[in-house]
Image: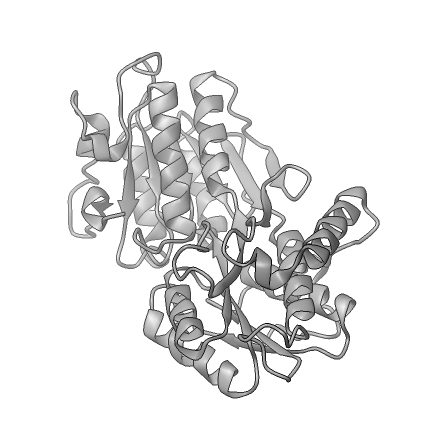
Amino acid sequence: MKKRHALVFVPAAASLLLLSACSGGTSSDAGSTSGTGDSLAPTALVVAQGGLGDESYNDYAYTGYQKGLKDNGLEGTPIESDDIVGQGEQVLRRAGDEGLGLVIDLEYSHAEILPKVAADYPDTDFALVNAEATGDNVVSVLFQEQEGSYLAGALAAIQTSNTSDPKINADKVIGVIGGAQSAGIDKFLVGYIQGARDTDPDVKVLTAYSNDFADPTKGQQLAQSMFDQGADIVYAVAGGTGAGVIQAAEDSNHYAIGVDANQDDVAPGFVLTTMLKRTDVAMETLLKDYKDGKFPGGETLNLGLAEDGVGLSDFANTKDAIGQETIDKIADLKQQIIDGDIEVWNVVEQGYPDYYSGQ
């Protein structure tokens, strides 16, 4: 992923220049093709904090967005801003002013501003990922990240006791680093902690926030601090900051757990697994619905383990270290969650459990 492929929002500009989306010939990097969607207005993907190149949430979504454009013969481009939170309303309004048919917004903090913007642009469809927003022309896409994170926590709790693994020490300590303290991020953290607690109540879970989704150095420092405190597995829920967590794991001969896009091959053998969040599938689904005239405005799409919206990677580089017995145990826990036998705490809907304050 290269940021030069995305259009950067400039506040002083008279309008948002969606050149590759609106011109007759578009760059292949924007994913545009000719085909059945040519009669439809162009689309845009608003990139979240951390930007393209994070090898995680944004990049995974952009991959699905590109594929969805190609498969459906649509035109589109990503949009980035150096301050996507502070400039969010301006970005969305300028996208609306361009007459786009569909704007997919990856930035969860836009939940409050998007409904009023969407109301002013009734001919544009909007999709918000990772948060709910109301509006007849708005669809919300929520992932049940707590379900996949529960499995990651259970796996970490089992593996931290597996002292036959040279990357595991004698201490039953694991960690998790969030990009920001918010309900959306804390869904991951609390699910991970619950999975660990349910599996082995004696396991200690260290927590920290990087307060940045694009600072690998900060991620490396926080992870190294956890490793120094006895952790041997650290889950990174912080976008591009997570690259530093993986680097710290490799440097310390321990494990990281990746997030969103499959990061198992970033440092083969040092990423225990990745908690996959299939934003790529969500992008492809939204673009197909838009092309087919079936955009589900006013609805909320929930994607969990049952819908294959979240889950763990296939342990391609670590299955021998983990062992088949543990892999089978994780598969059983997954099925119990799908069947409703295990209820995973959802911070967004339920608030915080008594074992985690969110701070």
